[in-house]
Length: 115
Image 1 (cartoon, rainbow, N blue to C red):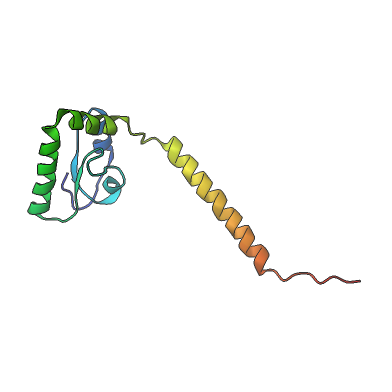
Image 2 (tube, rainbow, N blue to C red):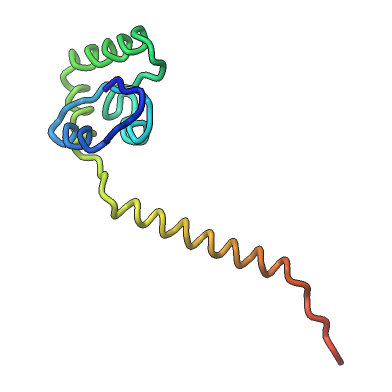
């Protein structure tokens, strides 16, 4: 997947679910999905040399059956569902609200005590 930009991650997710090990350029949602040597192989520069180096790393991993199976299983078992992401967003949202409340309370002048 040597894309200049990432048109759709869903194809990648389906492929990984069935054990395909991706070789792709670090861009868009692909960069958030595939991690070098963990569940695929990543290249950064838009050059044939960088792409070829990633392919070579992939071929070398393929020649080590145990390593290859670990990479496949990692991709197949990665949770890309919304449940975990939704919880992270909810936690972040609550932190933002708490921070906003704290900021507002600090910016309000203290009420003077009248005796």
